[in-house]
Length: 336
Image 1: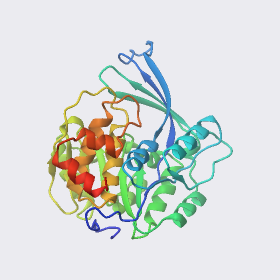
Image 2: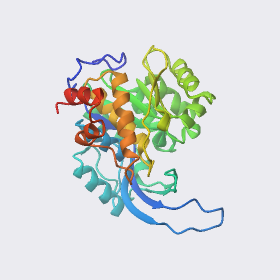
Image 3: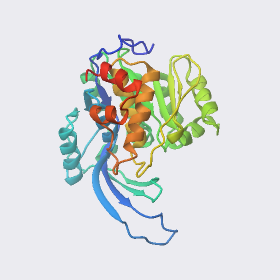
């Protein structure tokens, strides 16, 4: 497998690589509210949960579909850091770095309204304190065939951004690089974002992020414009929620992969479920089009469940796709 040309091994063959996340695993305080209050107002939450989120959701989605996963981000010392480490261990996700002793892991307050939409406010912690020594440790652990996932959240952080940009530029050729620009993409300094985009093999974004990156409102036009900006070696996914996903394979044309109509109860983590499933299915040797179809199904499953880390296991995904040709294809590729 090549780090840049997007060539996959034979379908059904696990490449031996892992998903290595250079993002941030933090704690989410999720509050379900009928609607967001007006400015200066107040509202009573109908349900409140504390859970690990952020990049943890991507790792969990990939791990539940059988891909080895590694958290290579920073984490702190304290109750939030302990919670993150315990949840990573529960999901069978390895860790690379030792805890930062001076600070706890950060947290995010996520408001989920009656329509399933989510709104966030984040307090940064140790996960935003990545150092050059951390980067050196991560480089030493990478293996041929690994897939490195980067989040725009980390690139937007004043400390993490320059460290991550330098690290990405030094990644070996045998590693494939995936970027989710995230909602803070317009706050990432150009000197940080440019070298990451230059090295990316895939970029996956939602419609808002695609618009910020290209200035195009139409999803298909934004996907094509982003692919043109990135060049022929980089693939693009533009996620359009229930409308599905626009896929532009490296050097190819924009292709619409339809979504699935479900009753959404919580969209928190849907994009992460999509990203993690796409990476897992690529890692199992599936072609990008099939991987996107599986990722669309995983995201649709996720929004029918409450909570951010609701990506399906393989059994749940196959049950969701019961009777469809895609189920047989995924079952064969993932050895079920």
